[in-house]
Image 1 (cartoon, rainbow, N blue to C red):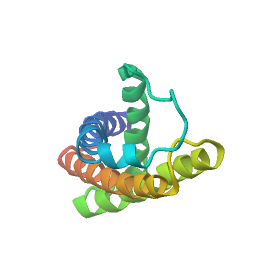
Image 2: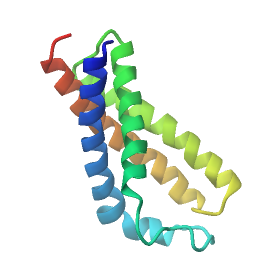
Image 3: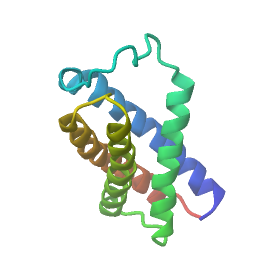
Image 4: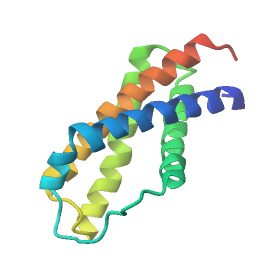
Length: 138
């Protein structure tokens, strides 16, 4: 693993994860998650703090990139899908279920759905990261 590959993979992943996130949560599944929200009120910001969302997404992309590189520089799209999906599911399954246990942000249906959708999102991003890393040298 070198810094060039980590940086490129993280930036490519940031873009892919951000776009997929907007499509999933603000377009396709917005109504589903609104219908499956918990009783907590006042938790959504009127204006998102975009730099914070981008920074968190960059960390997510860096984790996927690190996991791909830990597999001896796995660069096939299939490897990317597998690694990205696993990272997305485990990362967000952890966060979603802990938040479900402590807060009333979502019901159980939304908690499970979010973890599964993050596996899809992570898998797509992992494929994109792997494809790009496969095209660059060390």
